[in-house]
Amino acid sequence: MTEPLKWVYTEKVKEHFTNPKNILEDESSYKEDGKGLVGNVKCGDQMLMVIKVDKEKQVITDCRWKTYGCASAIASTSMLSEHAKGMKIEDAYKLSPKDIVKDLGGLPEHKIHCSVLGDKALRAAIDDYYKRNDLENLIKKEAACTICQCMNVTNHEIEEAVLEGARTYQQLQEKTKIGTVCGQCEKEVSRLLEEYKTRHFKQKAR
Amino acid sequence: MKSRRVYLDNNATTPLHPDVKRALSEAFDIFGNASSLHSFGREAKVALDSARNRIATFINAQDDEVIFAGSGSEANNTVLNMISCCSAICDTKCKGRHQSIISKIEHPCILETSKCVQQKGVSVVQVGVDEYGKIDIDELKENISDNTMLVSIMMANNEIGTIQDMKTIVKLAHDKGALFHTDAVQSVGKIPVDVKELDVDFLSFSAHKIYGPKGIGALYAKSTAPFCPFITGGHQERGRRAGTENTLGIIGMASAIAARAKEMGPEAERLVRLKHRLGEAIKAGIPDASFNGHPKDSLPGTLNVSFSGAEGEAILLYLDIEGIAVSTGSACASGFLDPSHVLLATGIGPEKAHGAIRFSLGRETTDNDIDYVMEKLSSVISKVRNMSSAYSKK
Image 1 (cartoon, rainbow over the protein chains, first blue to last red):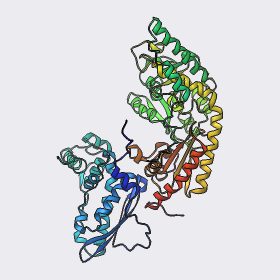
Image 2: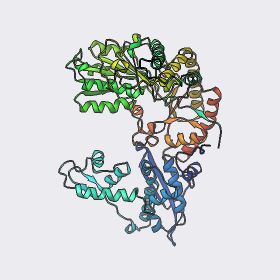
Image 3: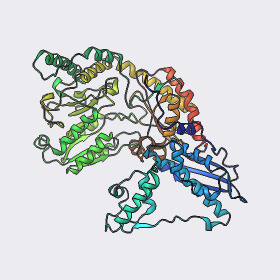
Image 4: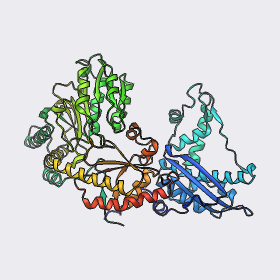
């Protein structure tokens, strides 16, 4: 007997994809405390996330979302929204897409890119909540730093390129043209490359 | 698990025809090397010759104009590589020519190979298409010159099904003394292909798109066209493709072609009708759907539809859960980040390309299948749109 045919991703992904949790059904009547919209339909994925917050306890009481995205984006955001509900805001802020992927039983490497969208949208929603409540000092500024002065490439663009599959300095150069003029930034770029690879793809040793 | 399965991905590949299964099972014992002089070899040679004749006849070629290859992709690579490296072409009528022309909607095995060719010093121009996927004839005219060595344009497109006006574009190439190649992998066995009538110099085709086995394709090379082998080091295929012939594959391909000769005409009519049914049902039942490809000049079984506000991979996988197999132009399904280059070339924009679904019907598709697909498709699209941040009812 051959094994029964497995689905393309894990059973956990299938479960959340088939029956996604916390979809934002009626956007117009939802009274949210924070709202985040990230991504772009032109690039193939977009995520909208809204949260309600218990302001005294600083706890997320509800978290709902909508996406123009693939199965991995749907499943990981469904899982993320379940995690976020009942969480302290500051803890939710730190939720890592890597943990979500782990809970989903893993995703193929080229789908990691899709799974970070929910996480980004959640942080955008929290930032929006902070802004609405004069708590801007709590927003973790992740202002982009220009790494390659010649080609004007930021650390965010390097991270994005890693998520999109760049694994070597050469591949980064192909995607971003980084370091193609004076080349002074090579050392710093290589360091960031390793950091982002570790952050998004390396599993902790068991 | 649901047992009902509907396969609407026949442009990707097809199930074996029952005749092919029979022919293959009867050929298992033909194991000799067709190059050997002894009886075992001669047995294989006889089978090979007869298969070649059947295939050549089907496309109106001479037997020795058909060169077997490992795939349609290999056949395409053979032609493109010839123009970059080889004296066989440089020394003939194309001597001193340094440019080739392809289209923006070619298969990756042409597009990617062209990049390699370019690095070897041949400039490759990509001509665009109109909104239906038809070659921009004016752009082709502007680019074609006495410097053009080869024009390679696919006869029918795998994603949107659009069939080109071959006679016009072949004539443009020949008028300037350029060679003409067409990737006819989606055409041979689905629509009439006659190499004499088309007047092409090279034509690639494959078995597994027409109910034959995988791993076998062929290249038609006109007897008067220059030729240089891609795989060297053997005298097989008259020195034009080294390597012991894939006897079983070739027998399977010939059997598939024989079946096409009988079934192609009536099947095309049936598929056009089924495709029309599916298209009309989508129009009537699902709002904000738009159709890609040419309304008339299109492969009989190919229907490409964009569902606005719904992402393609999600649609594909919800349909998969219902047992329905389709394909999508979405980047997310392919492992690449850009959506279908074919759809983008038609100018529909990235959003519609990401939400495009290709239904490719085949000889096993029934009316019941179309009913089943419609029963499931509406609710799948509603489900995806209901959770979409990019869809609001118009």
